[in-house]
Length: 319
Image (cartoon, rainbow, N blue to C red; front, side, top):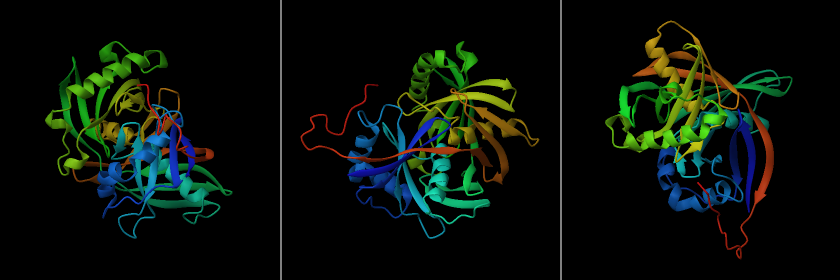
């Protein structure tokens, strides 16, 4: 019996597993990510694959934090495995922690929910008004530019880190735009661009090989220069983020802040019309400290099970 509480952030699902997961060993959340396949991958497949999930499902296992300085630890997962970061999930976890009473919060004011994730320690600042959660601002790990103008399958991509490594390409470079109608073509290009960059030095994390690899390809339209953009992130193996992508927004902000030194707010829209707003909260190390504001909403509570006689087992995906 596997229990979950489900949310969506900007239209992107986030399934928080609250019970039924075996212990995942490790001294840190990053260690636990390495060990998750051996310890709990059958649960990921059960909850993420059809018929209980779908090819674009997303969620997390709650695990102990690295030390008492954080409230929670989280292992993020999707249909193909485990990611190093998840901004929309961090926003959802902030809402979850306050609404479920995991972190005490006032009826009016801000509450910091500190979460250890594989890429480091992040904070979800949860705003409440009259006892209702109204918004979450998530402060990410330091984010920075890795490379610019990298050739990839007939286009050039800028590569940046926002807790995961992203390649970014203007959709217009492919004669496309970030619209639902162009989504099949963008998915196909995303897969090809990611494959083309798989062995490029820009796909390697400079400090920890466990964080290496192009996680996603971000296609964007400029709606008002660098201040207002629309994007879609194609991540893992052709999976599509319905939200503006939190860690992807951090990567985009790092690139834009590198080009435009004056303070600005990035309005970042998604392919389904949802919105994050992002700003540079400070500078650290190679780049910036991003803050990204959004909101998550609970969609249901579930108890899943696997009938031992079910020939489908832990499920399947069709793409």
